[in-house]
Image (cartoon, rainbow, N blue to C red; front, side, top):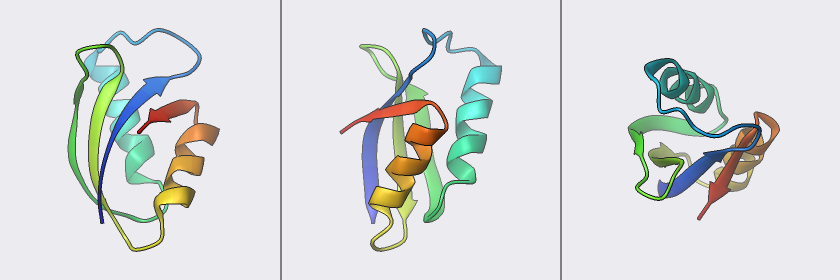
Length: 75
């Protein structure tokens, strides 16, 4: 299943640095249900646009994982 979502960092404003983007990618890569990270890019209103391929029935666990890691999804 393809998921398109906007992801915000809960604790601080985004800096869009390479280190911040790498940290987000690393977090997403370790999330349950991830088959592929198609894209992580700056969203024009703030945060990041994230496009991932997930296994079936893993959306809830994926979003819960992001929440616990300090990221907020705006679908």
